[in-house]
Image 1 (cartoon, rainbow, N blue to C red):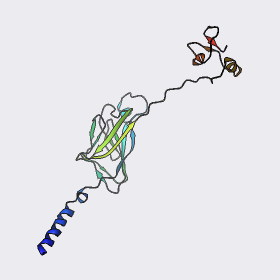
Image 2 (cartoon, rainbow, N blue to C red):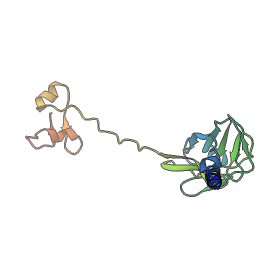
Image 3 (tube, rainbow, N blue to C red):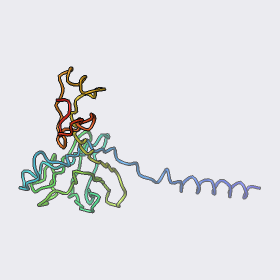
Image 4 (cartoon, helix red, strand yellow):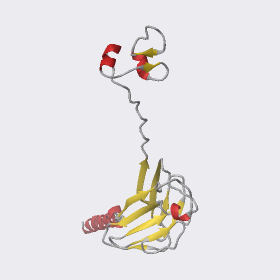
Length: 190
């Protein structure tokens, strides 16, 4: 009986010791606080303009995070590999697309052209093992097409004229097609 109890206790100890919750490292508390994917103004190039395209990463946790060999990439697989860099607790770092000298607050991808697509893309941060830590996608909403500024529609041309509207010309005014051109001269509500 004693050997059976010992076997059960040893088996339980092995099962508890090999649990994935105990061996998994906690994910760092990081977040993207801003992604400036559309540098202000036209995409004219030039390093100072390219550096206006950037990603800001904030460490919201209580411990510093070491980024050595971590990567930041877009959906088209442009990859930036972090240098030996530590982001302190509560601090942020701005990762610029262009060229520059790295510091505690600014890192540079050393690229000569923009990588983040204005119309839509995904920024993905992976740790040194390749595990996804953060991802943020965006899709720029298209501007709505301007609606024509039509005059109000009336029951008759007489009503339109009485309200101060008209005349309407064929091929020029959409309102022309709302009314009957009795004399067929290409003008209604005259």
